[in-house]
Image (cartoon, rainbow, N blue to C red):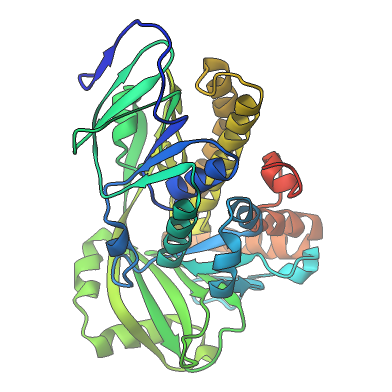
Length: 422
């Protein structure tokens, strides 16, 4: 039993909420909005000050929202607010080293208008905060920290750092890669740090991006150019995720503006023209984590709290949103039937539905990073042959394009049928 947990045996309790969510970021906020939309009484606890997270200088990141994830955000009641800020990805180009484009994906080849949308994280947070505030069934409590928890047969409760006690049938950890909830659950995880750091910034460029996302595989790691909406003054913008070796990150972050701009321009295709950094530079060490289990008595993990992957495929949040769709669907069904939403059978069903997908994506991104982030001439030749083969074999190419859209494989009901109740 964890040192911050006590177990008691007592009769049925009157809970303050149906569900408590630890973590109010993109994953936790989406889950709270989804559940609240369907009448589930939720407390969403977050340690960060909401106003600070909306500042453009908070972390500078954007997210690629896949076609499938867009349906989840629509079901949560936030997509209408996000759509004007999203830049559609209509084409994806993949380059390797100094070679010309080896693989080109076009959404219209598989009957879609786009693969997804690039949206600033701060704008997603803003839409989620507004949605939670509008839902009478959601209590967004921030900034606040959870100090300890207590379980009995029928409920779980937490004590906040302001002394309040909250209780519910289910506690969900959406508190990221260093999840306190996972530690409370006593669950170990596989973890390793890549010798890589992602440098993130926004860049302006002379020519429009034409809604093309570029993934350029280089020996130190991938260099991604993600199309953003033009700025209010018409400036053409893209989000940059520049993966570098850990030993090089401090030198690159210390580059003067002119040197950094020259480095960006050298890594952009010529068609963009001159390129300059906008705003601040941010850096994020890259790691992989995967919890041995996602569940414990009346507790569950979602998104990065349970599994964090390399950003090489841009699927981290999309994977987490699939967790959220499955778990929310199970909770809403159980609540409607008058069943216990924290019951072990429900939690086992959630883990069973999500574990294989998450493990497969973790393995795929790890392998891709090892395959593409090296200087081996043999592997370079193998990569080129493989990418050209994918480009020429239409069923294989279509499979990868459907994967990029979040529209392949076994999908949660929420994604497969937008007309379903959730």
